[in-house]
Amino acid sequence: MTVEFAKLHGAGNDYIAVDGRGIDRDWGALSKEMSRLAFGVGSDGIVLVQDSEVAQIRMRVYNPDGSEAEMSGNGIRLFSKFVIDRKIVLPGPGDEGLSVETGGGVRTVWPKMEGNKMVAAKVAMGEPTFVPSEIPVDTSQIGDLDMLQAYPIQAGGRELKVTCLAVGNPHAVVVMEESVEDFPLVEIGPQVENHELFPNRINFEIVNVISRSKIRARIFERGAGETMSSGTGSTASASAARAHGLVDDTVDVVVDGGVLRISWDETGEAFLEGPAVEVFTGVWPD
Image: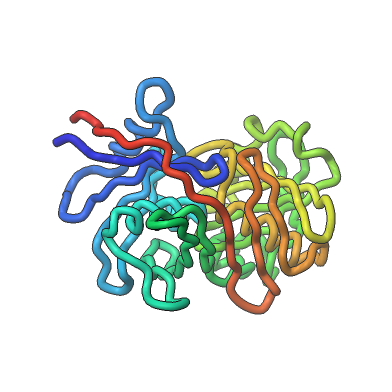
């Protein structure tokens, strides 16, 4: 059975959107095939449309290695553009926004429209949690610590001081003095992702603080590798810097694919703002 799809990107983080309602197939295997560079469409994974019983629509996210992710901040914007532009579902009246079921909970998306097309959005990312068991972290290895802030781990022959949190999916953030441009992320990223401390693997971010309102981040996504951008990774990076008192409540996160804006005041939900662009559509032959 052929599969119709759209290729989209948000600040360089690209996903393939597929309407999977009423279709039963191995979506993880399809993501592995379609995400391949040169041999496939090339992407950071698939965002899949499914019906929901608890929200207006359900999003599932599959990584390029076929594994399923709980949540993607960029992915949910691209997913929302896909379903709104095609009128699969529309946001509620006024400020209600679009409610989307994800593996990390129900999220609200407020689209920015130009004509009848969505061009950007603000996303409710949920409340970041630093509780080790909720990330999750193997608590048998950390004693009675109630959070991991600048916690030392060994990877690639280096000591890295990670701050661990979850924003719908797990993250380890290192705020460093060393320039992130010079850090060997491709080599060290897989070692952090698969570190024994993290039973479900983990996303890994390295961060330089530029000012109280701007940080620079590079992102290594679990199951995908280094990406040009990540919504949850940017949210985790800004939240970790905020938890350390290094930035203010609203932060521009400079990633390889552009800039995402994160707002979090340490007391509730974090919010992500960024673009959503459709690149092309196609049909995948089976």
